[in-house]
Image 1 (cartoon, rainbow, N blue to C red):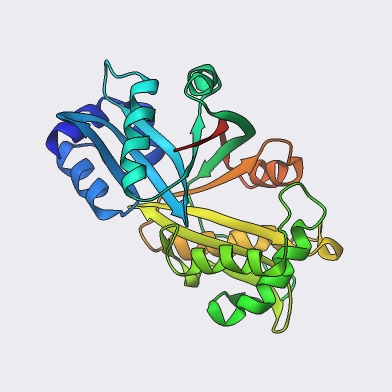
Image 2: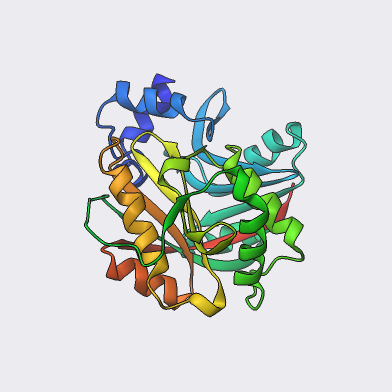
Length: 276
């Protein structure tokens, strides 16, 4: 693991975005070992570290840190070999715009673009418009219907309520990192919930907004703002020093909300999807 930490420590931008609390080899080693989402790709010696999320037979790699001298094509080939052994049959990579051509040459098709936003959680005195409820699996049926309705008229829509429930269940059961029930909030009172914000943590010191959605009839009323503010109030006293969110390019409503709340916008990445 020390060989891995050696080349990771040389990637300042990667450390800043993904392991913000790490400044030494020892800290990097501990952080990578502490999360089930970080994997090492090695062929004799380590060639890359990547963040991997799996959902059934599909996998998503959202971050890659490559050793010097290794090409993206080489890393993709190695990834495919590892994922075959895990019985994965489809892989999605989030890559920089200048890496799209290399992915295309490896048989990947271009998908949507995303932007990562991040900020340090701070406490505020923002008052909620409706009561806030911590989200647990008890709310799954209500939230699934709410999420299905919220996305119904978008190109990210679900085929049915059950598919929305499956995604929420994956998040709450730890499939995307440790689920933070005490920092995940819904606006309203059961069973009349109108908006929700779900958080996870998959790296020491970094939490992520996994889902943020509001019923179409209740948008532009500040519910998402108060949910994120309430989440930051919890995070600010828990040792978390970074809150991140991925926003699909073109979703200007969420982009404006995050910027208004002090989130920093990182460069755009492109989703590339291909078979294993």
